[in-house]
Amino acid sequence: MFANKLQSFVRGGLAQSRYIQNNTAAMLMPTSQRNFGANEKVLAMRIKAVGNIGKITKAMKMVAAAKMRGDLVRLQNGRRFGINGIDMMFKADPAMMRKGGEMPADPKELLLPLSSDRGLCGGINSGIFRYIRGYLANKDRSKVKIFCLGDKGAAAMKRPFPDMLHMGISDIQSPYNFPMCMSVGEHVVKNSGDVDRIKLYYNEFKSAIAYEIREVELMPKHRF
Image (cartoon, rainbow, N blue to C red; front, side, top):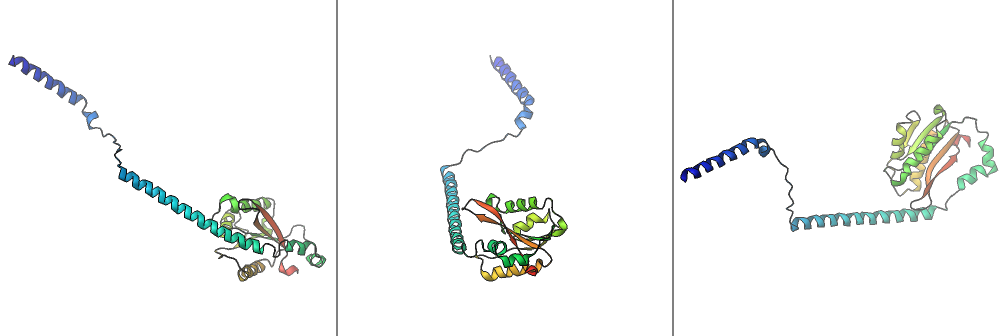
């Protein structure tokens, strides 16, 4: 009886050793383990962190809305000051029309795209760039100069029009005032001494989200 038990024990040990030998590679292979043991305290901390991010985002929205309301008030207060005055002066005044004289068939031009220093949503800066790119498609590059107002406009014009980009002004502090506008105007006058006309491109906002690109033609100082 003892011999039978001993034989069965030996057979069991041999079977177990064969199983270990045949499955050694599988047993030693590393297996990925995922820990789903996050307790309630960790989850509460994560929920609180997400809530704090939401509060910060809401505060940023409120600050941006307040800044926009201030800019809209300033724009509305100065909107009637000289609006359409340039068009009336150069196109309806007979004296200014006589001073203008005959425009050459292929005039030299100075383009003034008005952009921002930082990126804005809705293609506000890229819209002006695409408009000017389409305008310059069939133009003589040697007769066009570009004077960019804003860092985004200069960055967009630098690669396709390096030979036409003569100057750019960036980091203009807001709110804009009369001395600052006069300083920018002096730079424009200095760079327009050899051109026949100046074209200003900017976004005219119809609402907070709708705008259209407006083109204003100006007369250089030497033609007055």
